[in-house]
Length: 285
Image (cartoon, helix red, strand yellow):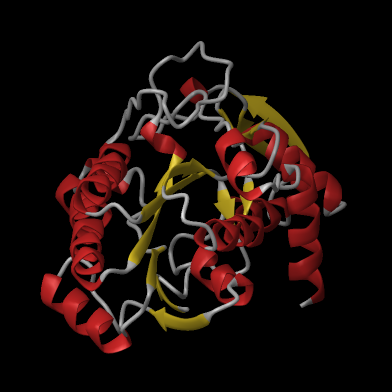
């Protein structure tokens, strides 16, 4: 199998290159511009993959409130171009989406399944949901993978990841104030990539939730980072109201991964386990 990874230099794209048992064709921004149909057709026709994994995305959540059209072009129109090429070429498309498609229901405490109705609360979230709909309408042989709180060894310039941000701030401050009323599941890119590799070996196309197991608030996540890294900084919980941001975040966006487990027979490790392995990786490499 020949697999083209779009967004190959990002956190998930980098992890996918080490996890796939296939001929991998990495495509970065220099090789393909997904908002341009001609660029997509040219790059993918030249690569001639059996499967395309779209790990490219516009992830500037707050900035998207000021430039929603830009987010929509990358997160919705781009996947549509990829889906149309895959439909014509008879290739499978794996499209990476986000837990942010959920957000309504601030009192929710039950993880979302794939059949739960989305409720995006920001321009970024709307663009991600639109991308899902374009892929679903364009071709049958697709996987849509919603994940959450992703972090990995590689990070696109200007985006970073939460773990590295906490590690950096912990060396600069005596106290960190972190939001404690937004709950999701931090997910290690390597674990998500391995799950995707398992999915594409099946023909069980459709929508899947793929995260590490368990859940945490950002405060709990930060506290565990500090504890495992043996840093002496104090972590103090605050509310979202005390840390206002332009885009509204989901108060609860934990994803139920039962469908993934039933399809592949594998459960992802806990988020704590993934974090411990990640910290070991970045401190020994």
